[in-house]
Image (cartoon, rainbow, N blue to C red; front, top):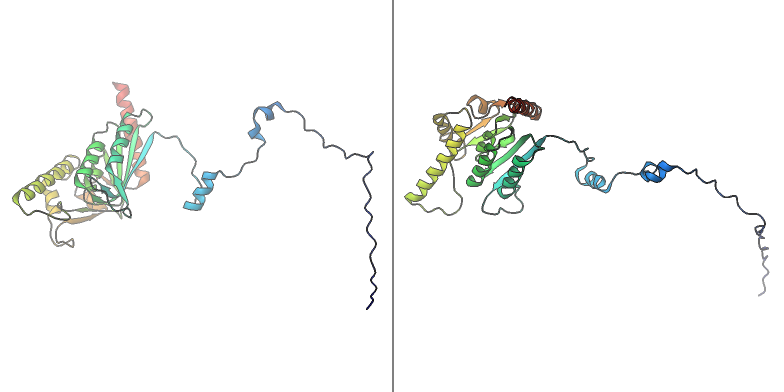
Length: 269
């Protein structure tokens, strides 16, 4: 069967005239400043690190501020000679000690602010950190946020001045052991001597007396194991362990006062 179709005529596209050329774009005037500093005309967005911070933290990167105060955080459980499971939030004493040495030697750092939110941990590691903090010659201020329990108490009182927020708490209890314990007189004697080290450090670096601290430590009827005391906010100030109730703003102001006092003392000398 034959069919007939109408074939459209091809569209004729005119060719460009070889004698006609497009006008060139006007050249930008030569600017020496633009050659010297190409960043002046370059439009830039957020850096890669800023975008990563936005994705991971949900916040833009904070501007860097030059400060003479260094902030040191002690959070989670204080890890000593034994490595804790990876899901535990820990503060490793082998990381803290070199930082404290560097802060003591750094001429740019004039004061150290220590923030605590710890449940305690290894007794000897905590005492080592507390001794390092108390031995720093520069002004130091601590703030207990959330909790400064167990061996966190000596760390909190090791600074020149200590604060605790109104909702933070501190647990005072005798030294306890985990795992296998050999029930011999030597074990109890060792625990007693270690406990004396903690009591002596706390009483030397705070206003609490040894009798009062031991009474808080061995008080019955408060904790689950029926021994120890939980102090909340102003209670820790009233017994003399912490110097004052306050937050981060109070701590920074106090630290600046101590820094200025140290400068005046050096000038007088």
